[in-house]
Image (cartoon, rainbow, N blue to C red; front, side, top):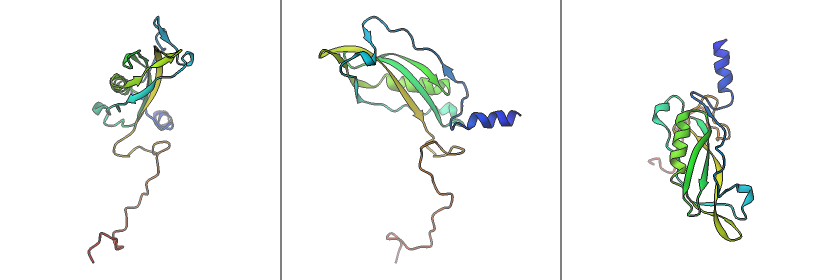
Length: 154
């Protein structure tokens, strides 16, 4: 029965060790919702989150972060909304705080705006039981080295 529960948890393609799920904090005064701005923020510098080394056996996961893009394009008030593991959430927050944006605008004036951004952590070793949803499949057979190629000695 325990094995069935463990396999059911793996069926989604992502594994949860220490999941995080919390409501978004209330909007601060002067911060606009994304749907209320005339021009949405545009990322001009993105940083990929680092895979948490503590999760060696859990190499694939997701995290969703909520944050504010200020009138200067810098990210503030980043918080984890959901994550398959708290370490994925922490890595996503650390990365998004390094992002820079062209700020949102209302009537051609820059304004602070709240955004939500999902992050996906995938194994750098391309190993995950059942594969990663959406990833290209890799053949199980190694390449046949017996056939000559352009790089083979003649």
